[in-house]
Length: 130
Image 1 (spheres, rainbow, N blue to C red):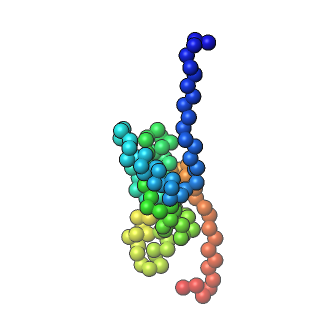
Image 2: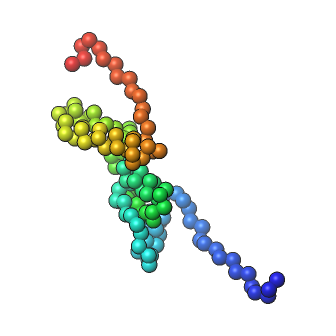
Image 3: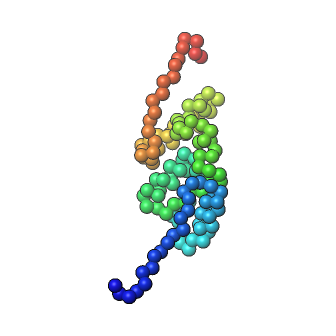
């Protein structure tokens, strides 16, 4: 024993549950930072959350900003699939369907193969199906 008083550094314990209080606290902490972050991702849908996870797993200091809760918007209302845009074909939006399929392919092959996987689907086709 050196005679020095042992100091125990305690960090306040915060809940990990998403809440308005946690959001306010974390925004205040972000404003008070004296060092910059590497990446700010705006939107916590499937794409934003995937980008933030990928960046953080590569060691980047990453901040994900979401106005509500994770997957609050379109991801929550849909099937949560990173789809290929087939639903746009029904309304004749071929360009959007193509871009969506290309983006899905990039996620599958390069950007987030650890987050996205192909999911086989069976679509029945009957004689009277147009």
